[in-house]
Length: 298
Image (cartoon, rainbow, N blue to C red):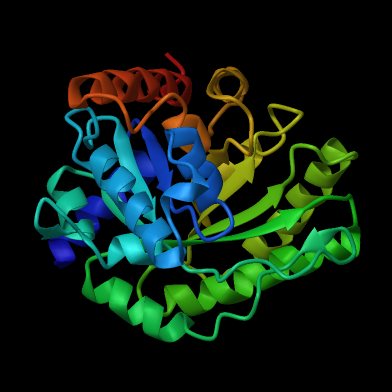
């Protein structure tokens, strides 16, 4: 297992590719299913909804085009991590394809206050981390949001992210820190400037040898976060699509040095439940090829 973790570490830090975000939770799942062609009338409760979502995710993960050749990592919802693909536990199935598994660990957002939304208290975090380690998951992801250029609010978001990241690292897992500046923020560029400064502050305070992955909104200034890549505490710099179409997200990503994709809606755009398996894989192949090209900048 130690040898596997070393290989995972190398792939995450140095691989030429991108991350697939397959971690839709309660709030975003109905939209993801609707995009896939499954209306809300097709399920009567959350259990049925998540079962349909799992089927969609498994269809993606088992598709011929979804391999570690271009997909470095996959971020999973807890129910997906606990499920199977092809009769194999999902994290092990993914690693068999050369894809490193990450787990979404946050439990949603608090109500917006001071221009930001902090994460809710994570009452089940320790148990979740133990299970993730047991199943061979390499790291985690947690998300906060930023709407306004509020110094106090942005500092609070970053502090919360890094404090929980320390707990996650204590379990031997790699944290993905995701303070998302909303793409419709009325002062997006100013918020990104403040976020950059707060990230730098917390990165400089990391204990020696500690590293995180940053997952950030594609910035208005393409060079905004380039210097963070040189920080010894940053293992990788990921870009979220944030509601941009795949075309727009990839256009912005291709112009942004050092960032690779970690897309959700932009990855699954165009996939439909009614497609035959060959049609589905052909559409997924086009998506993967486009996102990969924008990530590796070729």
